[in-house]
Amino acid sequence: MSTKVILRADLSGLGKRGDIVDVADGYARNFLLPNGHAFKATEGAVSQAGAMRRARDLRDAHDREGAQAIATKLVAKVITITAKAGPDGKLFGSVTAADVVAAIEEQTNITLERKQVHMEPIKTLGDHSVSAKLHSAVEFPIRLEVTKR
Image 1: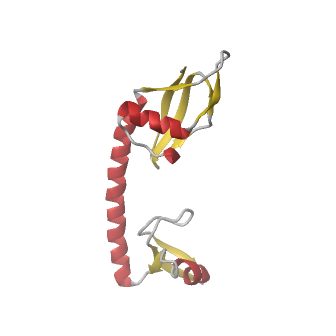
Image 2: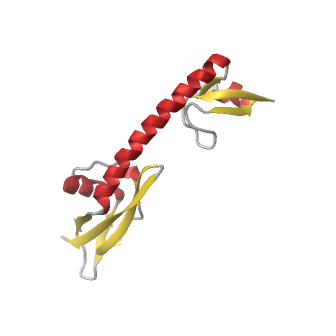
Image 3: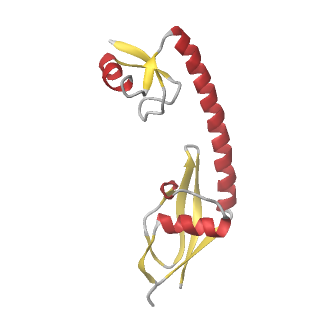
């Protein structure tokens, strides 16, 4: 058997807030409903779900526009990071996502979160590229120049 429920939160693999989904009875009864992730899809609740989806879509469009504006500013810039390095160009330590976020905020006054920057630790001097994902539809490269301190 299956039960129709309306999601109260975004759940990966299942749907987004306001979506009406069919799930197994046990999944709804034992997990979604008791944890507040969903509620049963009655006739009145279906219209409420429509309002939730519209609000989600408006918020999503607003967030996407903001992320696009930040991406436009950052793609045009080269972020410079200074680090201690040996004579062969290898860094003592590495440049991490936290270092990149701090450098971006210092040089552009744009605040990102460390988890939005996707990269492997950088261990050499020179030009590097890392990616940033600010929104599900906005992913862009950030150019870095690592120089010797």
